[in-house]
Amino acid sequence: MKSEPDVYGIDDLERDGREPWDGVRNYQARNMMRDDMRIGDPVFFYHSNCKEPGIVGIAKVASEAYPDPTQFDPESRYYDPKSSEDSPRWMLVDVEFVRKLKRTITLAELRAHPGLDGMILTRKGNRLSITPVEKPHWDLILGLE
DNA sequence: GCCAACGTTGGC
DNA sequence: GCCAACGTTGGC
Image (tube, rainbow, N blue to C red; front, side):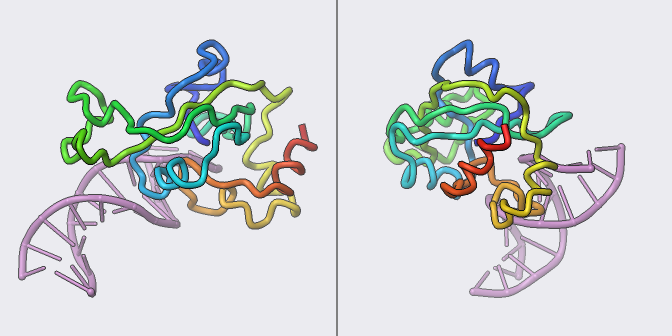
């Protein structure tokens, strides 16, 4: 799961312990939270749009999917006037801090590793903020720490 | 700051 | 349903 460190980084999650993953406004990413995530699933926390993009920590899914409250709040930058409480358009899950990695495993490093070919995250032009990680890739990446 | 790679919107 | 125009993401 990607987040911009200037907006909400791994240090913020460590401080808060747990956080609703709000603001996702992409259908594919929403569908993954709604349909594919289960409580307890492990998550890589990825810093995007920063000096050194890469994986910085581990979190876990801490709730079932439920409607993102920011879509109903006109004051929120994530407000969606086309959504309604009756049929909410955007869902989220809560995410819980597990630990920081000892070091950042950079995107450049992930890209350069031959064993990680096929990862959606490292595909050129990938903009999805939530992507699945295959178990072998997960283990390989943790081995790089 | 640039720009590639999308996703969304809306006219037709 | 097509597609041009536009907006956004995010690496570099």
